[in-house]
Image 1 (cartoon, one colour):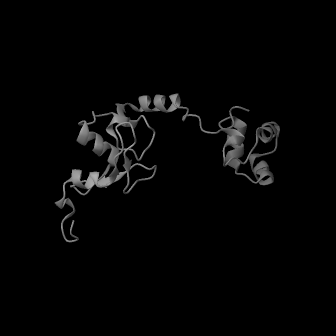
Image 2 (cartoon, one colour):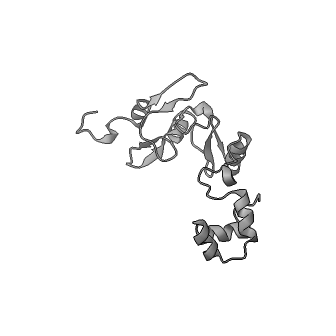
Image 3 (cartoon, one colour):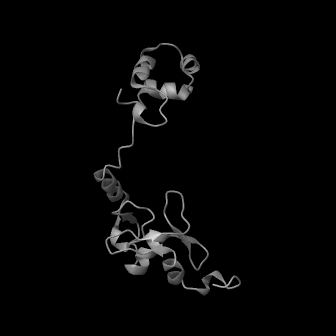
Amino acid sequence: MHATEPHHAHSLADRFWKKVEVGGQDECWTWLASTKQGGYGKIMGDDGRFYLAHRVAYEMLIGDIPAGLLLCHHCDNPACVNHAHMFTGTQADNLKDMRAKGRGNPPRGARHPRARLTDQLVSQIRSDHRSHRQLAKVLGISKSAIGMAKAGVTWKHV
């Protein structure tokens, strides 16, 4: 495309497939261009709006995505645009698929990489009768963290 040509001088399909590393039928087809947060590819449509690359691929190769449904990946690779790796479903279907693959259980409690408390410390906090403000100052954490731990909103497993 020449620099002075309008963006839509080439068809969306032409622009799209130049940005994909197409593999075998069972392999991920990797989006090589711009991505949004989370790793999903994005491409500008002829109307100047951005569209998710996997959705564009699906619609070009399969057809419209039914209203109210998501486009989910069997491969769990957000950069994949292989239509054979996608299925339509509800948010509940997507969450069920995520849990079935063991991705629905983020680390909890002290196993969480940003945890500042331990199970033992939470037990001590819950039995301590000092104010939230006093405990927060002594432990170097926020009053809300103290309150949520005491109320069982967080650290439910303790």
